[in-house]
Length: 291
Length: 261
Image 1 (cartoon, rainbow over the protein chains, first blue to last red):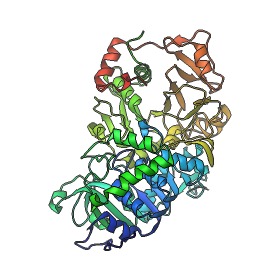
Image 2 (cartoon, each protein chain N blue to C red):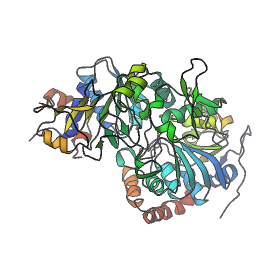
Image 3 (cartoon, each protein chain N blue to C red):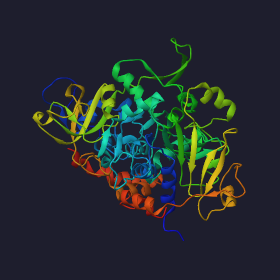
Image 4 (cartoon, one colour):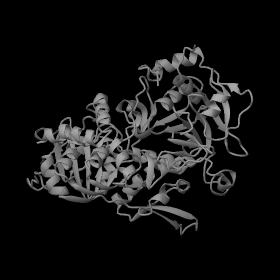
């Protein structure tokens, strides 16, 4: 059931950025995505409405890049069998426990896990956002086993200034980033309420950016927002209005995470069958909500 | 019978370890370190600074203590840093005096593992991942806490080093760590439901510092998967004072630490 409802393009068009989740995914992600970045940290600001659309359209993700701490956002995509490789420093549910689908797939070997650390993700995105081919990481990080386990992204070289070993992280340049913001205007300028996590950085590093928001506002409302809390519209390809679209995760400035619903998910997703049933009930049904 | 919970006792032990004027940082599952920092700040260390994990909040105005390290309520704070700034500063190595850490496995030299139990390519248990644990050697000292004191958690050697402690011991630590002036002082304290551990300065192995009231040395040994240095009659952890409990419960107004774990 692939739909090609309208094209959303990056750039300075005055209108046309506000689209449905279907149109954003069809127009910007396509059938498969080489490098997809998803925003949100722990159970906060996970852009679930657009993620559910990726699942409904069965979009293949060659490499999924997360913030330093992913949760439901990554777990459902992995559970749906859409992810070939995940580059992450954490997929879990903090005080509520381990991520059931991530854990099952990693233990069964049905997904490739590229272990990174939070410095690699953050500085890798910095490099992507600033056009640098890589970033040098602080001395001392080489003492962990993480970099040795992921040679595709880390390299140990000789620092030409000091002749000491230096650990590098390859730039992360997502083809598409999907993030959540509280508000956006019709030109795509978005405001992130609460903590920005690495979501702004992700947007700046990506080629195309889909921003899911709680509500649309006028450009006048955007004026005077603190520096560092907004993403200018020229970086944004499409805006999807999805009130409540982070649920059951939290949306800073709007609602807290729904702990009973997350516990229900964790119970259901203990088995592949339970996850499939949860998916059928939670994701297949609410298509209408996201239009 | 005691009139405090194990988690309250653990928070108090962690709190007493913090000194006035220090700067502390923590990661996920942060209720205990938040409680410890809040208590220290309201008692013996009014000049303590602490950064609440991914939220970037600096000295959050606690009460209640949220369970998630990224809870928006933490941003009611003295200051807030965007997460990329926190990650930047973690790399400097001269900003954070204390780093709170946890692990699925914790070993005799204070290395921690949140990545995987067994072979990483075919893990018996795939953990969530270590997030910022590779930064541990760059902090002044490391405080490790866990609610699981058993032989699965406390092992001779971790299967994967997410958070470096004293590595394989004095020789490697001398070559690559502190001796190379690249790092802080390493792990300083481990707090569990049974006891507190510190590290022998020569062997750099964990040793019993105090047992919690009502816990025997035998019990700790049986729950620990490596040979643990311990005095015949170790000191008993000093229980929370009425003043400490009063402050702790004011901060922990939802009673997170009062719940039976």
